Every structure is written in structure tokens, then in C-alpha cells.
Amino acid sequence: MPPAAPSPILRRRRLGVELRRLREAAGLTGDQVIERIGWASASKLSRLENGRSRPDPQDVGDLLDLYGVDQAVHDELLGITGEAGDMRGWLKNFPVMTQQQRSWAELEAGCAEISEYNPVLVPGLLQTPGYAQVRIVSARQVGAGAGEPDDEPETEVQARMARQSLLTREPHAPRYTAVLEEAALGRRAGPPEVLHEQLLQLCELALLPNVTLHVLLRDTQIGNWYLPPTAFSVYRFADPLDPETLAIEGGFTDVMSTEAIALNRYKVVFEWLCTSALNAEDTLSWLIESTGRMTEAAPPSTVAFGPATAPTQRRRASGRLTDR
Image 1: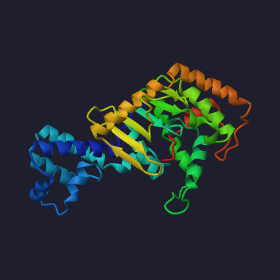
Image 2: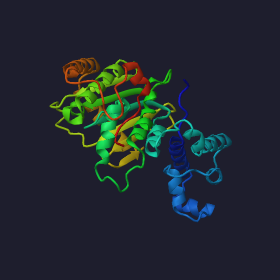
Image 3: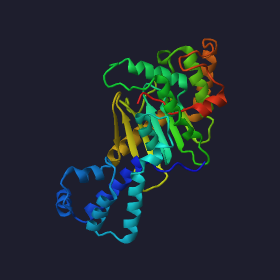
Image 4: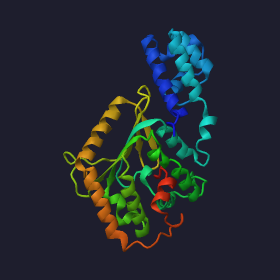
């Protein structure tokens, strides 16, 4: 399977970084650009530079002419502009996805490396349908009604499942590293049969050559008693010119950033987590032992999503699953 094409969202971020760099190189402020081009909205340039709006080729062309770029740069950035606006072609890749899940799939496309940590959940790319079902239903009990998605839980699970094929995409699967908190697999996380199936899937995924898992035991000290306050993910892309992206999960809201200072801090934290957690070999042993201890307590799965599937079937059906 060929590598996934960069998503429109990623293309917008790349275009925004380049436009900001060119403006600063030209010695122009945002107000000066707005005045010289004659745009009515002062926020138009800000939205373009921050990758928050679908770029119009004419607008981008006007900016490039103002900045005096050469023809090669002009053509390259107009090409990126076209990719940034091609939502119709992108949506065909994920026909069953909800809007929220599609935005995460767009971010993951073109990734060369993903690093993830969650203090209370199994990271989404590793979850089983049953674990995901429990997470979705339980999260919707908080403030149920106003502002909640209209999709049925099963639809949301299927939407998230579509993303997990990323880990087995050949020959361009990204390098994936996750730190799993022991608490995410504890009795509070779900019924025994759900946790049993989740442990089985983690054992399988840990054997993939591009996947590295670390279990962080409950009483392990991190650095100088550091406690990570939030879940986060760091994405590095195959194209080195696409900006690394940090995603911070804050319960019911998510924050994205490409700022170097924030990225570097979270990279340091992730190194601390990996160093403090069990190494990959010991993690696999821990997972196998935990699965064995739970075997007698886990009858065949009858969770709302459906009966447990065989390991090879789970691998094909899996998707990225978190409460986000």
C-alpha cells in the first residue's frame, strides 16, 4: 500500500508556516500586507498563516507576488494550496468517519513517527472495539444531551476503527511508540472480558516491528517526582518540511501546536516517561502475565459492540480509539 497522501489540514499548516516565513523575510508586518493587497478583513492573513482556513489560490498568489518569490517557490506553494483545499478527494478515504475522527485521521496521514501518552486510557491506536465502546458510552454520560454527537456509539467505534490500519500499512507504516499507564488496564477501566481482550491485542501489537510499547507501573517515580498532567501525542511527518505537531488532550477539548518550545518540552517529558517505564521486552512479559492472570476472570466477550473476534480479525478491524 502506498503511503497516505498528506491531508488537507497538514497542507494548510505547511502552507501557513511558509507564508509566515516569507512575510517575515520580506520585512512586512501583517497590517502592511493587508493594506498593500487591499483585503477587507484583518484576520484573513492570520487564518492563512495559522492554517485555520481553506486557502484560495488567488489569495495565495497575491501574497507570493507581494513577497517576490521565485517561480519555483511560487509553483510549489500553489501546488500545496491545491492539496490544502482538496477536501472532497480526502473524504473518500474515510467514508464512515465522524467529523471529529476525520480530523485526527488527517493529522496522522503522512506520519513517519507518532509518540503517545495518556495518564488514564489506552491510547487510541491500540484500543479494541470493546474497550472503545466502554470509553465512548461512559464519556457521553457526562453532560449527555447538549452538544453531544448525534452518531450512535457503534458508528463512532467503526469510525475510529478505520484509523488503526495505520499501524499495519505496508511498507510505509509509521514508527509508533506509546507509554501505557498500568491504571489504564486496571479494573476501573471496564469489565473483565473487555480488559482481557484489550490485553491480548496489546500483546499482538507489541510484536509489530514498528510498534514499541512501554508500561508505566503505578508506583514508578518519573524524574524528580514529575507527574504528567495531560495526555499528549507528538507527530513527525515523512516530509521534513511539514511541521511537527503536538496534540494535547484536555478531557473534552484538544489543543494543537507546532511551536518549537512546546514541542521540545513534551519531547523531554516523553523521554522521561520512556526511561521510567518498563522497556519493550519487559513490557511484553508484563502484558502476557497480566493476560494470563485475567484469563479465568474473562468469559467470552458480550459487550455491546459484539462478541470478541479472533486475533487476526481484531488486527484488521482495529482503529484509533480515544474519547476525543
